Length: 331
Image 1 (cartoon, rainbow, N blue to C red):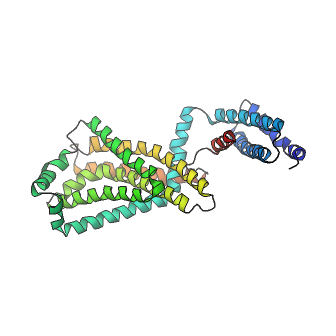
Image 2: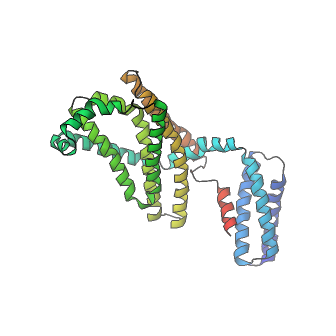
């Protein structure tokens, strides 16, 4: 590469980025321009380093990018702006982009649970191999309903949240292997199917669903989201598409981290419902209505807010500017 010709051809671009970086105030259009020019100049620096590593040009471009990066950080706003962006753009966009993965996981698990419950109801002898008659009586008449009221609500909410976050984190972190995610999901629904079939066979179906549905709809949806995103992470290196395997896996890994943080908040809501609503004195229809409202709110969050954020270009991945910054630092 002819370095002199390269500098001459791109000097105007560098000067414009420098002017934007030094400008005291930037409107929305200028902020977008700053990010775009930053990305192009970062590419220029990479080209110079690779083909004609002139120390003067490398130093100039590195300082220019550092100044532009700091200016872009100020343009992006305060910590609260970052939180707002995560809640209304990055997290819902990630859920919407990966919707078919977690919706498929949700549908598959619901069908599998229904099939298991029907099979167990038609094979009562299986119940005897798992629990003694005394244990069944204890579960049906005491343990199942007592589970939701044996602890103080605040402590129970914290315990439930911790457990569900742990299960979701395992689904996401073990997603690279694929099979462990399927095992975790199977364990989750198998336990539900076994208890549900026992409660139903002994005439407590209404009690079972009345206690499970208020919090279970949102809670299980969150777990299925984690499972679906974990499976997508596995598929990212199996079938990377137009990207390299490393790029594909890195993108989905960063998106999985976004989902993990967001699901912590979703599970906090389901944990509060389980601790304060499920064991409350509200009528069954009232408790279930609260659960339906929570689930509908989550779906609206994904398919209204998430769709809008996705169409605006958000994917759930981190800010492209930060990725370019990381690449430059490593170089």
